[in-house]
Image 1 (cartoon, rainbow, N blue to C red):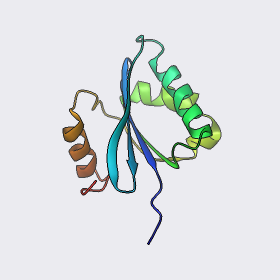
Image 2: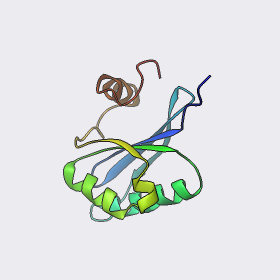
Image 3: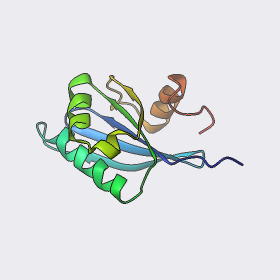
Length: 114
């Protein structure tokens, strides 16, 4: 049986973020964050770097508006950035968890059965 890596899905805009995890085929929320408009991408990148250093994930998928996506990526350490397996420049922060999972599956970013 193949080992499936733990994948973090970070869905963000400039003020809100949701972190979801796909682990052993199960898709679940990790955290919801709300920060000040100007600091969210930088603080989110710091949190992702810390989680990576702690071994929380092996793969990373980023979904955010283009400006926030660029700012998040800019704040990631090189080793963390190397774990990005996909990215999408869209705002999906308004979606409910089930709707978000279905949308990510439709886009091919998460398996349909997760």
